[in-house]
Image (cartoon, rainbow over all chains, first blue to last red; front, side):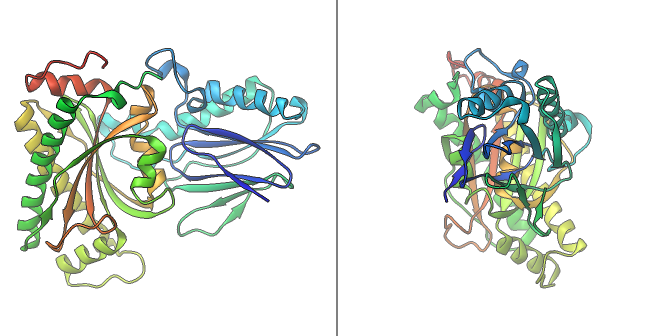
Length: 162
Length: 212
């Protein structure tokens, strides 16, 4: 069994029995998709909510919710997943710092990322079946392709499975 | 990718290194008078690096670090981060309060560390502001002790709008005045927003970067 590691603004797909992980999600959101019948799991590490924020036309599509999420769906379909069976789990979208005042809209990037990922999933009719988002702490996540379980690890809190 | 940041030439990298030396130098002086002892400083580094390499450079995504964050607005905008190892953080608290913190940090310890970060970053910004001739408005400082990946990726989100590479402008301080090791250093990171680079160059009489 292999564990594929996804970095910031990257995406990946694994099949049974492999798992896929991303480390240290803060304001970024880890979106995972799973096809229970084919046991195919996908993950994208979203950094920003919308491609409208991109400067220039030539950008990394995995970085943005509105391009990274649909691209991941297409990639999973190429791996043999059925779009109608895909379910999503989300983790991350934290607000790491709290300063108030003028910097505040930048600090709320975590919740904006979470909302944008949900919007992208809703427009593709993919249900979000569980999430561990918000708060002010970092998260490491692992998606197991044999079960679809998403494990969430933090510093100083107990490990959870969603 | 429109990564002009990753293609910046030597002259401009030197300018940024000088800004960091001036800022970190002033920060070291303030910290030294606060602690009442010598604080060492190394020559700053300016490293164009992809985001994922930056995280590795700081010790890996899951490594726990203690950071104080300040958002800068004004003549230029960007983020500043004072990042210390947990062992350095404990040493700081012990030195300032005389109390040893074993598990986690007390409210007092956190408040001391927040204030140290505030002073260090404030001195850096003051020196940078004088050097550039810009008025800079720092936010209230905010402290987080968490995974390096979670903290750094957040600080890079504004830079993420223009590419997948950032310039890590890094000044290192050694709190015990000793040599600076890669692992043990307390570091000051300046992460300007992408459109602030040319403002900094122009202010210092260096032509704006055509790629920027």
